[in-house]
Length: 50
Image 1 (cartoon, rainbow, N blue to C red):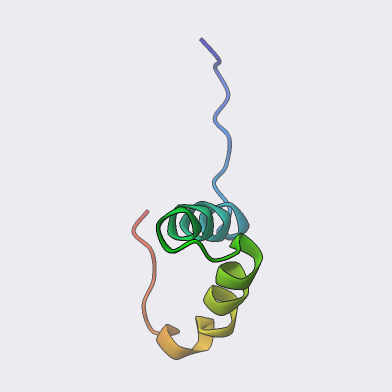
Image 2: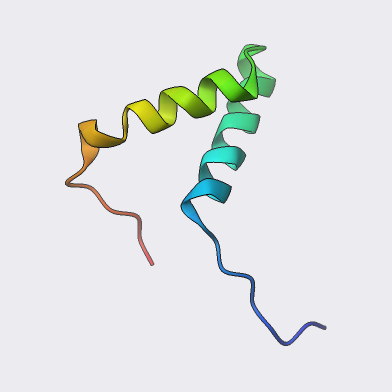
């Protein structure tokens, strides 16, 4: 097993959510990823659990 952990970045989360949504909606990953980034300010007061 690997001893080092890979840090999960915001970019990785966007890509995972966008690709999953793209599969379900048949939209492009790039367009969904852009929508996620554009709406970032809308929920600025929320943070992800650590």
